[in-house]
Length: 236
Image (cartoon, rainbow, N blue to C red):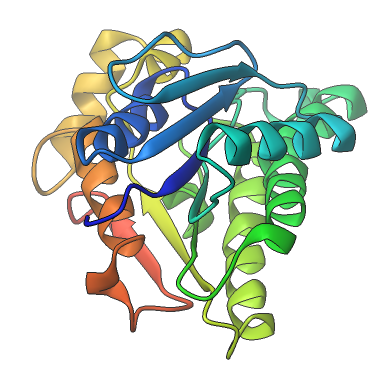
């Protein structure tokens, strides 16, 4: 890129989100990364933030800090933050449902709502959903699946609502990831079984998703708007 862009990535503390932040930094962009806990320090112009995803004010403050960090610019917004839970429907409490929906779906809405007034023609929003938003999650509970479906709906609706503004919106749907978050709820044996069921015979790695997100935020994807990209190794 000729000019360093201002990039804001939520869910950047680990796994695929960390990979996304690193990809933009490698290009020389100015990146702010937020999460429930502050991401680790990264090489390059990177600002790590701890974020209360339930707070509208906290989202707005994070966006302002991201803009300040990039000299007043905000060119790319990537909503990747999520939490997972394997709790089945019969055992779900309303508190757990609300917390997961609040972080995974409401959090993305608040991020975009806070950022939108600062975006200009040529800016890009990339929303991370999941293969669970295409069918269901074989690992997480129904509240996770519902949130992932909602993120696709959010992206498609925003793409229509923002048509003609020059602000592009796209959605990415990674398959089962090779990430610390996945290993918190799934055994190595189960992960191996999942990988064996994927046509490419492996889990989604950080670089797989990061390259797709980077492309969607680039000028090379200037005519890509309202798309939902599967990054899952052919898992139908």
